[in-house]
Image (cartoon, helix red, strand yellow):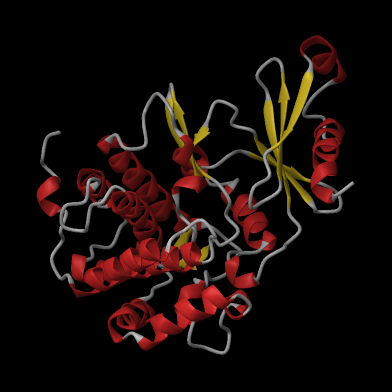
Length: 337
């Protein structure tokens, strides 16, 4: 039996050992365990009375630049004492004695943002504003966190000696990163992000729809999978969500100027502005979005079901973003649907 197959059994045992579920509750309400494993190994332990616990296997299986279990452990441990950040995270309960398993709040009424099918939908423009406000809340209050290291986005090192190892182990990844390194329009955006990178807030580092959980009633947002977290530049997280909206627009046949998600993006940026957040111009922000779009192109290049045309569209969009000095979404901030 593989470790993944054993995870549900180990998860249930740990939740019981930690006293989070009593024998009486199990007898009266029943206990169900589901393996939620995708890129990370997670089991959901549910009790019939509504209690839920997510148990995550913390053994690192990726290159350190793609995130580590220690980053995530430290983030939850540090944030657990910051009241202002609690609405944005699953509650942290415990680590197993061997530190291989971490217990978090199960959030059984929440759904991944990229899997929303009802209620407050992903493409409701007001979702963009809610995401911006949540990121502002996180970044503006994260400065109190202790024991957190620096975030290291792997794209910024694609020309260096500490280049992500997997980029040289797959032909598709080797080819696309070589094309980015040789393309002055693309690499200029990477260079600009490196030159302006700051470490004034704690960032998530891998902000995307799959790492955002949403509850419709009452409405709530939670950010998950903090393996890439650390001190860094808040624009990186915001740009990650902008990229997600733009990628959806590309899939629907829309470019930058006429993106079908322009309203959502404008409200995202509007919601992010406010107390505790340093003002930045679109010209300063655009390279961050271009870099996130390039990262998506690299990821898509290694997906067997993705066509070369889709990858090329993303690279073209990254070039366009790097050359745009005015906010292409500003006019949508006051638009009505």
